Length: 263
Ligand SMILES: Nc1ncnc2c1ncn2[C@@H]1O[C@H](COP(=O)(O)OP(=O)(O)OP(=O)(O)O)[C@@H](O)[C@H]1O
Image (cartoon, rainbow, N blue to C red):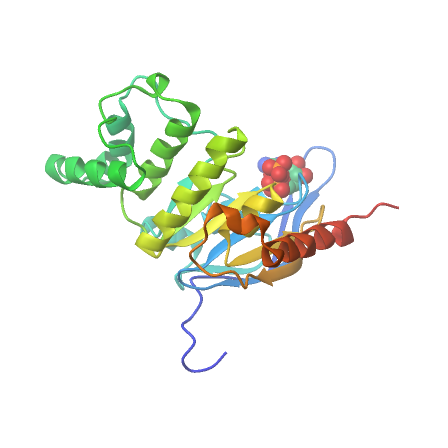
């Protein structure tokens, strides 16, 4: 690292995490080393159960590592959570059905003690960011699955943290909606300059979105490859048909295959 390199936003060193269960301990993460820089879009890809969600949850102080260290904005994950360093988007939109979309987005702001005027302003701003202007008064069940997921992204953006952690946010959506939301997410990232950690099962999604693709192996989850994308930051959807794109996708697939113990 040179003097001009900014320090990483998220830094994991020798991270281990073993869950104690009734039967036997489950080693979910082993010796994970990773630096994520400001403004990076980092995807985590790997087979089911390889620890992607666990790693994201560890960044968010929702799990405690059993070895190694992890810092977020130079702080412990607990301190970063208290400093509201990140927004978190879960697999399911998880909106409260008895609250309107605006009410759902506003909830974390209410808990944080923002004034009513400030809340209203932020709700409007984030609804615009996810292209849901005019839908604040609707209830979640009045929106499509894709719109609900956008509302849950708005909720994570409402307090304007520099880091956005997203756990397979589009996994349950059909391909056309997913393509659209991928494009929208890239635009949002370009507009806001946020640092994004993104879990996915989809190779094209990982390659399309990311500046860095982290390939993980099955349990215990280890990082087998970190691919720095040579693609430009501005990416139309049809970039997925270019040789450069297909080459990165191939490398991800090879990495996934190499990490797999078939014998
Ligand atoms: N609270 C827990 N107690 C015990 N084992 C757990 C716990 N949480 C996760 N695990 C185990 O840790 C491993 C990693 O789980 P994790 O959810 O991080 O995987 P993942 O890569 O996100 O999987 P998926 O792609 O299916 O969501 C799995 O074997 C899982 O069963």
